[in-house]
Length: 400
Ligand SMILES: *Cc1c(COP(=O)(O)O)cnc(C)c1O
Image (cartoon, rainbow, N blue to C red):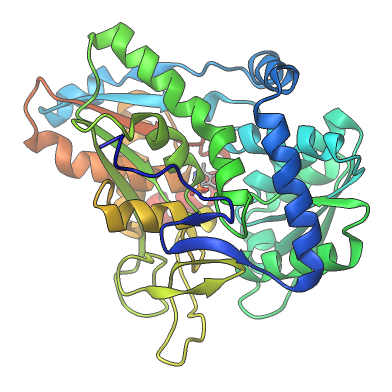
């Protein structure tokens, strides 16, 4: 397989027919500048050394690969390991990317940072690295998300970032991205846009993937040490797709390893009530990239819904569209109710309160693990911790 798969993306950011650079003329120059500088950075040992040093000593890598023994026994099937990205500084995988891009901003001599955020985790990660590097930070966030993720708004304020509410449209992540792109168009000379997932125009899907590959590289070494072999199945939730591609990518050449990405099924696969792009979605272009997205017959982007703000977006990262087309990765969904049940199960069985996003991966594991043989090994990415979701989960699960 390795000899047949072309190295992706190509020089213009295409993963097969997906990806690319669908942006206004004014953004072509900074994107090409970023792509060129990144090509230098990725082969610069000093850049990689500093990145790895900060991942270790500032962020807390490597994260453990934890055998969820009690949960596995209770399910009575496969052995389940959790990759503990929830233990990373700021509480989710997002800091891997924010840190890498802060180093890129410094290389580019840009002292002002903008970012979009949905659940607020990427905003917090970006505000954190901006404080660390003395960069001016502005985060765009939908008003609806600001209301449901108030504690993350407070964290960003405490870190010295400016949070700009976005009230247009559905007032969630898609509108926040549009505002960030509008800002960038006017400020490209001074500003770097730290995009938060493996999405958008080239080079973001590739660069963000590379900054998160450490998840899969570590997991691979850790499972070989623990079990003496590769896992049968990898599972991760998929919003834009950064935590999933970070886990999956270092295993893509290992044909015996199955991989499943879990999208947000919301209230079920009914238009406007979910965010599962591979269920009822179509090929289109949104915010810089050609990929699968949720749109109506006229090509208008549809409303989306998920209990987890971090999975509530109309488009999926282009490399996932490519891996689905190749048949290398399978994609499914978990509903809000299934994710909440997964949240409860992991909290009560293992003492780990997962992010509602990660709970979608947990829900899928609880569906399939009981039917797999005891010799099978699953690695699920626990992409973040649920501190930010405590109020929402109490409301839904305990009626509090
Ligand atoms: C943002 C977020 C996600 C979704 O983003 P991806 O780019 O798909 O990884 C998943 N889990 C957590 C904890 C998040 O904060």
